[in-house]
Length: 97
View (cartoon, rainbow, N blue to C red):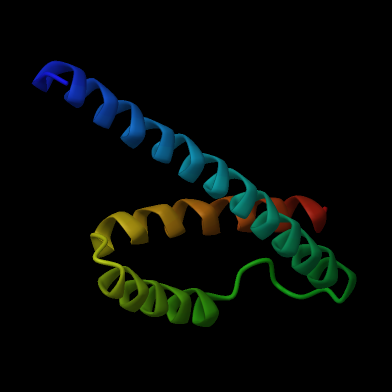
């Protein structure tokens, strides 16, 4: 097998792994949102605020530790979680109307 063929095979393997990981991310994110929607309904039923800044701060600190342990850029992880939290809060606010 020449170098170009070997490189093409490796590229395909990497891309196949990325595709599997993307599927895992999507299904995991869907499951996470199912849980946060349940939290949002519970908050709406009990007239609780849509956001919880103390929990969010704890989650950011926890995520920072997880990212470091996983050898992932903590800033990237924080950006991702910040986006997710903002979407969750938006959904929670809609449930309270």
